[in-house]
Length: 245
Length: 135
Image (tube, rainbow over all chains, first blue to last red; front, side, top):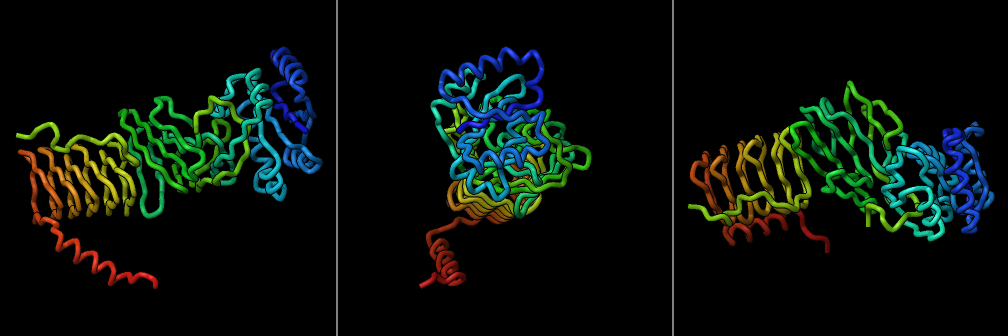
């Protein structure tokens, strides 16, 4: 059984037509299932985990990066997680803006997402953990004043720019293509001097007195905080054009 | 004097790149190729090659398979394979190498010693004595 979790913002009239089209397409493909609306749910975790307990085989996030992030947070690190990892899949139907996570999985738009759900191509991928918050794509922070502690050494960044801790996002320049199966996080520092720093690590501690860490573009976290990677932790339905092999 | 294949070029397949705006402190270890354009204090060790750019400032002992130095190094360098020292390099420390080339303009303040087969055998024996294999 499929359970579709609709984000709050989809209640806006401007999304009605897209939602209708998606629902018709899902019915045509025989993929119709139960709909949960986050707007009417007090505790996402309990609601989603109840669905898994009563037999949901696929949880589909309908929305944007924030929706996926909320659902991942509700699924992992709990007693239901074992069942989720073994039996339940996570799908995504991107609607609106801020859908870089879906794009990383090769899901172009909502119509493409329906076909991808039908094809059911599953990848088990790594999941990033920043403090208590999970991320699929990346965590980022302003570079000036940021210190990274990795094992026996530390990196101090002395220029303005951005630090990205990447699980699977492809860099804009295309030079860095992360592998979300390797149990490693890619660390990319790009500064205004146009110089680039690149390395990888299993875990690190990040700190910046002035700036906050932004996880998957949706959540702000205070530093210092530990960042690590959980290997092969999520089963995701992906498209052929995903950014990783 | 030097041909284009003097080994001073930056390699393309680096596992780690430390940019010019980064300062690394501590014991930096890797398995793959490392490019350093910034500053490093501590030690640097890799099973592969190290490239030190002309703006880089290293205060560390370096141990690697191959090394290219174009910047400033204050510390000892031990390279089992090929060590290429560019014309902009400034080295303050002792150097052990398998093969070496030094470009005109380079500054080297320290002892140069070639790692011979005898050295390699003695080192291997020392390693075995220090950490006897499990039987």
